[in-house]
Structures are given as C-alpha cells and as structure tokens.
Length: 200
Length: 97
Image (tube, rainbow over all chains, first blue to last red; front, side, top):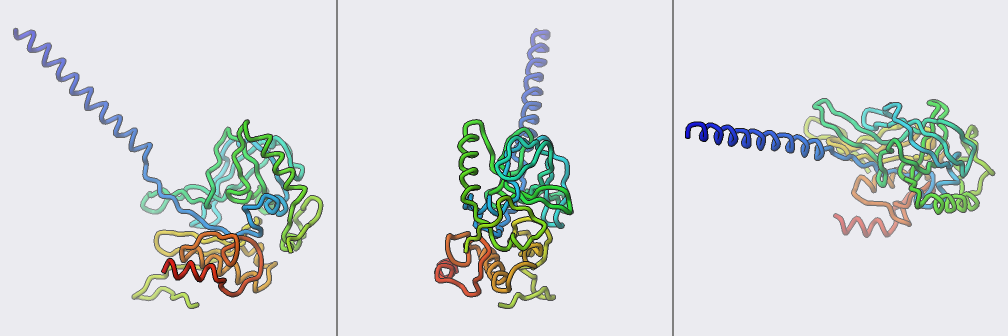
C-alpha cells in the first residue's frame, strides 16, 4: 500500500511540476510574442503627391526591383528619427542603371529610450524591410552617405511572384508618363533620366 | 499663430527643427511622448519659395492638429504654394474641435 501511495504521489508531483513548467514556458513565449512595442507614426509631405506613381517615378533617380540581403546599419537621422540601412541586390532596373549590391537607407527603425522602452518609428503606410523579401524601390541617391533614400512607404513596395509582372508594367507605364517637380530640377547634382516634365 | 515655449508652468507641445537629407521629403510631423516634432528638410527647403514653405508648415500643423491627407487643399501632398486655409480643412477643424 505504502508503495502504491509513493508511486501515486511521485506521479502527481511530476504532473504538477510539468504543468507549472509548461505554464511558465507558455507565459514567456506569449510575453515575447506580444512584447508591447509602441509605434510612433510619422506623417510626411513630399516633393510630389506620393500616391501617384508617375510623380513618385518622376521625382526618383532610380526605380528598381531588388532583394533585401541583410541589415547593415542603424544610423539615425537624429535622436527621435531612427533609420535602418540594408544591403540589397538589384534584380531589375525600371528607371536608371543600378547594378549588383547597393545600400538602401530606410527612414524607419527601433528607438530605445533611457528607461529601455522600445518604440518602432515609421512613416504612415510603411513597413520595415525584411531580409529575403523583394521590393520595388523608388529612390534618390544620397552622395553624403553613399546610399539610396527611397520614398518612405510609397517607394518601397513589397513584390511577390504573383504581383511582380503587373507591378513592373505599371511602373514602366508610370515612367513613360512621369511628372517631375521643378524643385528637383534645382538639385543640379541629381540625375533624372529623360529630363523633366513639370506638373504645372 | 504663436507657439508657446516651455515655461515653469507650461510644457511645450510642439518643437520645430530642421533636418538635412537628400530625399524627396519636404517635412514631417512626428507624435512623441512629450513634445511632438515638426521637421523641415533643408535639402529641399533651400530651393523653395516662401509660399511653398508656408504650405509645408501649414500642412504639418494640420497633421499636428489631427488631420490626415486629402486630395485637395492644404492637406494635399506635394510642393505647391498655399498660404491660406482652404474650406475643407476649416470644415474639418469645426467638426473635430
């Protein structure tokens, strides 16, 4: 009898221990998944109406399809504006002639305050770039940093195998009808393919 | 419009600052814990007329007041001259406040 009680007690203790252990693991897992990251959204105004493709293309030096290889830096613009740099492999040019591997500087990223709170700072309609995924970029070359600044959100569009062909056709069409703001004409060092077509 | 600075009794709600980035960005509004920020991109501002700059300033103030983008008036994206508030944003203002 004593032996049966001992076996029963051992089994019961084991079940209770495993249950508590699992609860602990689940709790940690849920906490890590639902880590409360605050999002700080930025509302920008651009040289062009960024919702119109022909204006985004017209005010970009380069429009191209590229695959994100890896994150290579987190150089912020200022204390409140993080930026994240990615190495990307150019797959196809729609406007301009880029090749091989270049750096994309995304105006978004994580910011940690003095108390250790993490905030994701990003523009409206923008998602952080993900290594392994392919995007259509519309960008200006930043000669000070030797990287390319895409239009936040509107110039960093996720491309899937299903949408790739349609997207290339749309942006090629937008390139033919491109509209460039006169203000970009004043940046003498900028190289806009096929000159300028102003909106006014 | 006057923006009240920090004093012993009040806390500044909005800070204006310049940024320099070779991009198509004219300016932005960023909501933060504490003082929010409106930033103007010197890279493009240096090439703009005063009235175009005023449009960007009014546009970002609109965001700070809680208005989103619109396809006309001061809340339309893009570089153009505008120095007065349009009817649409006035209507939005009276509706929101």
